[in-house]
Length: 187
Image 1: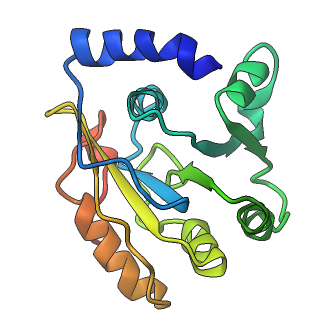
Image 2: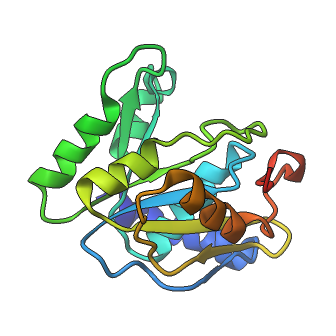
């Protein structure tokens, strides 16, 4: 329901006023995991919401539980958010894989850096979810200078995290976030 209401607002603001566009196409798999990078600003959430609304795509996301307090908690849940406690080991990967196993269609969006600051050590959760659920990784890059969100072809991980991460990061390396100093580097 929120998408019907907010979709015209997102399109007006991001496409008509700010000039954003989408390169690539909406994923055609029923189950996949989206990794969005570079994640350098709180604005990335709004750009992601616009892309999701523009593509008429159902998608969920996980975010730190601190964001889900009143008065914003209800809104974040309405927008597809799942709160996670990053301070406690709660087998989050297994919980998300179980959701994939019990649904015919499902995807979530994750920022693999795990933070808006520069982080050379990406979290491996997205990769482990993709491997265990046997789903492709859909890469979505934010590029603020050109105002584009670019979707790559779906990538099926091979089982070697270090090798696959080199390939994944190489896709993102030329895209610039809102704060480019915090962006993706091939360290």
